[in-house]
Image (cartoon, rainbow, N blue to C red; front, top):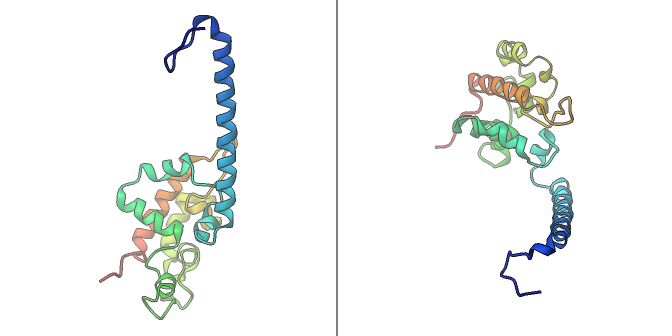
Length: 182
């Protein structure tokens, strides 16, 4: 057999080439699966990102990119605040020692879940939201695009995007997430 330049195969070595490509593909699949397993383990065991894991327990994936991809920058920023818990609500401001009080205007602890689902001062806005999102109002995870399985086992990105847009409209109307930075 003659010496080949990189990437060249002799015509009679077609079967060897197919076997080699098959081996490389299975090797790549094995490596990818191992990396994903390690990533999944680190994701679930890490103390950081706990708020986000409550919203979406799966690894960040293509559907997450689709969720953010069609949003204008200011709404993607707001969705990130909601999903990560890093926002200007009183509970987070107290956590970062920006303020001493973590209470809402109604007296309860002001968290993302409280604002989206419980605060009595936002009841009218929440009723508007309920008409738009229907069943998604049962959990913060479903409101913020958490991993909800569709009919074929894949996330239903269309309904999630509609729900997230309705939630972002609600959040903007509530004016609870505006910046308090000097």
